[in-house]
Length: 165
Image (cartoon, rainbow, N blue to C red; front, side, top):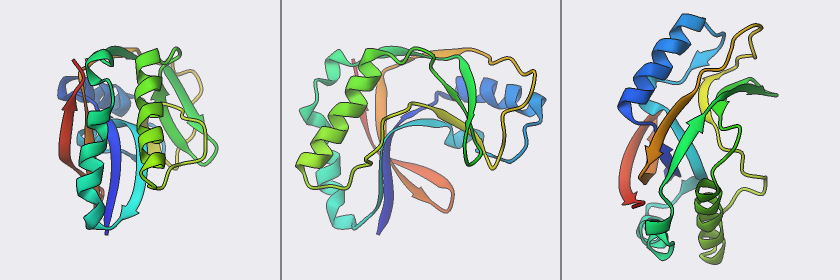
């Protein structure tokens, strides 16, 4: 069984900046390693390795050339349960279309999908809380790819990449 998800990787130069800022804030909880920073598009959970070929084929059915966009993370928040994260105050339409398109393809293929509204976010720490008096920074980058990842012992391994432009 493989633990899989589609996500937008956080570029290394942005991940370094986020990590440096985060360390300066001394947030409570368990920080996500800088190399694992990402924005999930679709979480698939544990699936047999035999489904991997299908998961690698599905994204080609999306209009990938039309889905490049700039992502701006400018809101700091913490959900019930302690997931401290950065999020876009205005999620780009292309981001929402990409996440929705993946969910539709997964559903049509009989794959498991999450039954909750998509809320784009970049997790900073788990088991945390929203600190008082911390202004949210703003980080932005041009999103030009997404990735199918395998999660193994808290390490994320890219299995396949798709360009968006």
